[in-house]
Image (cartoon, rainbow, N blue to C red):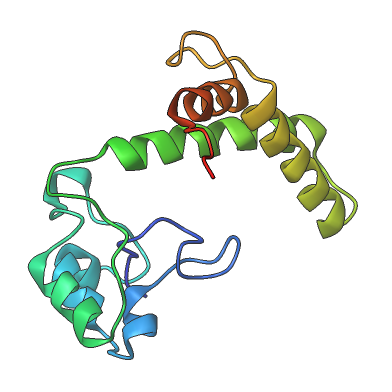
Amino acid sequence: MARSLRPRGRLGGIGQPAHACACLGRPGSVDRLDGPARRHPGTDPPLGSRRPVISSLYGTHLNEAGILASTGTVGDSRAFALAESADGACKSEPVRRSAPFQTVQALKTATLQWVSWWNNERLHQHPGYHTPAEVEARYYQTKATPVTQ
């Protein structure tokens, strides 16, 4: 099995590996990118021998299949770092603290409640210890133009 080039759950379902070769209909296409992973099926290669996450061959295969890559510019990892930070906070705060959940619906409800809290009540450091909802409201107040008839 080839090592995925994308985070888990991005192309697959929740908790399923997102194998690009399955989405592209090209068995083994990811193996050509992974090098050492091809020699050791089912295992990740040592950290020092991994190639860059996104290659031009990978992008070419996505374009041929009509798939839009969700990657930024070369060397721009800020979006992934932010997503990983929020994802880690979500897992550690509502999920691990309240686990195990009795049903999938209970997990979904807890996650949605946490996202609502994160967006509407939690004070974020970057925007001056305000909630995202406050920052957004302030933005639209300053950008609002009066309606003229």
